Length: 396
Image (cartoon, rainbow, N blue to C red; front, top):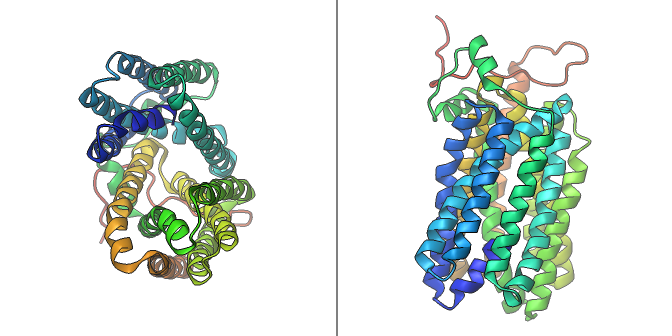
């Protein structure tokens, strides 16, 4: 976040086109890096791969110090950082699940969500201070040093995952699209991801709309806007704490359904009663629901994915979410311009409703078609025990 804030401030004088290109470069890099990271995670030792990715981040950030005054080089560097960041995210997801395997990684994913949110909030605040004071070069140096420290810490953990062991025991496809194919085999996971994409798009539109709601409809200043946005981050950290108590697939699905319902209600209530206090409370609830949705998705992927292709399935899910986030930002402008801030929140709430209903239908079908579970078994088994490049047809 230090680097992103610093680069945004540096390119602000160049023009809005440069800033937009900067964010687009990071997004494109993430989309390209996610499937690559998934394939590498399912091919090489994850801990060593993670260390190499972090070192590559440090080298890239150090190189950016020398070309920080060249906009084209800065944008290219951020695209590379987007790729490396996506690869690091995939490594993190798989290793965190390994560290807390007893509950499908729920506890680990919740702590990860808390750490990321706290880091993003602190990084944004510190990034503004560094950009206004010491400058971009210092921000780049701090981030490079942080990557080196991370690499050292990761190298010291004992937990590792060697996918070659699973390759010898399962027929594993090397294709990058194997993650998407595996998702397609699992009807519950497919609909869950599709519902999450729709919900995330609605959430992105609502967050982009917030500045117009606060300054336009509520007639408040930028300070109030900053406080309300901070409430969303507080909600995310609180929601991550709640998810640590979830056990089993049924609990994950129930938490998701409750979370989407509460988020839709939070958007609708804010639109009906546009007041800063109402907005702040609703944003705490909405942020909490966002954390619940993210953690339960990662845990569900972990629970229902064969070990041999966890990296590619996590990366496939990550790619879909990046695309959803981008689609939300691209559609936010036209929606806000045509509907206005209050109606935009109603639209965001309305988008969530069919996604929730579709998930309810799939859950009911899953329960109706499943056999009675053995005593003490609260988790549904993965659909396939192997990772293949295309869905298998049922035997005749």
